[in-house]
Length: 218
Image (cartoon, rainbow, N blue to C red; front, top):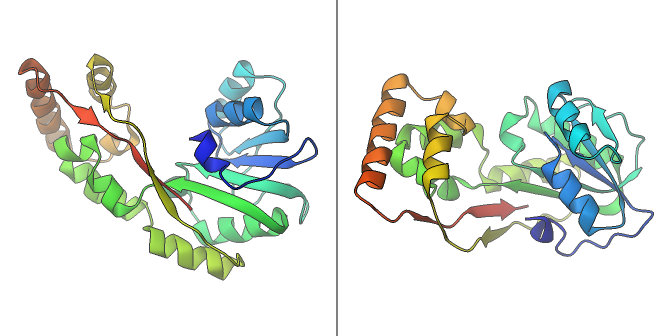
């Protein structure tokens, strides 16, 4: 994912990179280990940032909302956000804010999923209600494009990337059993229990569950 995020992006030791909605810092740390640029993580959750700092104390982590970033105008060389868009309370304000802090002609990468990609998730097969909920949470790619242009971005270039297929094993079942995917907390108890039952049957019947994760990079 980091290689896809950095596709076409040129960074140097003096470049400043901001990971908006960094959570516990996984991608922040990966990017910092890939590039020599200065990397900062930003998130609204203090608890998430504490976990990120425990993983890598050399990276600065900043607590702030995405629509009010405490950075000077035209001070950042590259901004990225990974699976964050559907959590934002005000996407247009966030895009305007990111456009403000970016230096002229620099880049912003959003990692998200289109509505078609949401339908193709394995969770959507067993929990179809989760797909309908997430298609309400996730703006589709054409909507993202329009919002970016309105925020002041001059070129928008969405692309899709499909990862190599993997066989889902007991770890996937355990994650679903613990409702480890956020959309599973938003469906009804009945829809969740029915999907979990169907998933367990698939494992009991030794069905091979192959899944290719598919993302959009805008």
